[in-house]
Image 1 (cartoon, helix red, strand yellow):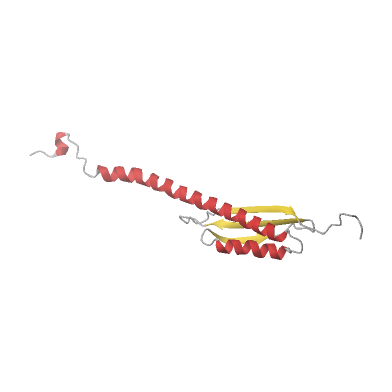
Image 2 (image 1 turned 45 degrees about the vertical axis):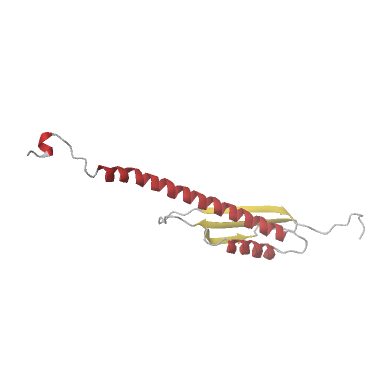
Length: 137
């Protein structure tokens, strides 16, 4: 009996494995990319919400920037696992304006050395202060 090679007939054993490898690798990359994008979006939303929470606390009459920082930090602590290395800053806060900035690094689905996604969100608003509507002391 002649071998398939000498007769010109091709043997296609193993072609399904090769085909699966060619299609599954890009599909896996797309799926992991979508999961990473979802994590990034969740961290953006978390940082925005933490900044707003801190602003809401820090702008009321008698509140300090430390109160705002504590509230935002507490919010980030409850959202564990999404982000790491969170930072909260009230730099830029004055007697009339409260500014709170929240930043964090996004947790990577597949850690790649040297690659990190940094998210920073800020919230700014007027601080409450005492007024005298009648203009007298």
